[in-house]
Image 1 (cartoon, rainbow, N blue to C red):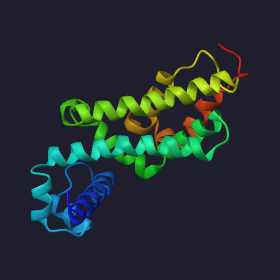
Image 2 (image 1 turned 30 degrees about the vertical axis):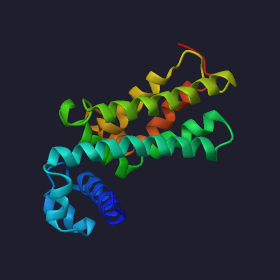
Image 3 (image 1 turned 45 degrees about the vertical axis):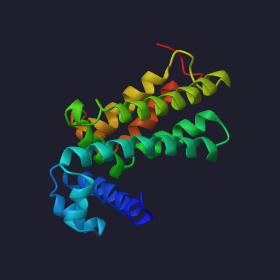
Image 4 (image 1 turned 90 degrees about the vertical axis):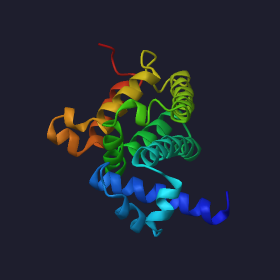
Amino acid sequence: MRADARRNLGKIVTAAAEAIAERGVNVPMEVIARRAGVGVGTLYRRFPDRHALVAAIGEHYVHTMTEALDTATADNGDAWSAIRAFVSWASEPGRTALSTALADLPDEVIVGRAEFRRAREEWVERLDHLVRRAQADGSMRADVGVDDLVHLLNVFTCHPDHLPAPVAADPGRYLGLMLDGMRSGVPNS
């Protein structure tokens, strides 16, 4: 791919993710093209329909999660702090708006795609490794697994409509409280 085509692709996916986070998955393609600084023809040459664009956004999003997890791991001296930093990143308002918009789509649009599944598996494996490190160093309860974290992230960042309004308005705070319950030294119920 030519360098200008690669730049346009990145601009389109970024602009589309921002627009979808703000206005939902039915934001007009023209708005996305304008925001990306490209013509509508360029947008449609790269993404022939909305499903192709949304699939690219989903794949980009899960790759971004992997990068954020790697950054949290590199920037924090211990596994527990890295987990907290990653969860905090994942629960930022713009990110949760995009997660919510993508979660409401039929599985075949994003989740059913092979590239998305592969990237998600990689992200979950890295998070699992971090969870095991936190358990090995004694900072995380042994009865908590990566699935518990993934489920919490899913509920708090992808499905806020299932939460009470105050919780949905500040998912990072409540995810932090939930993480406190996963910390080692908290009595098991």
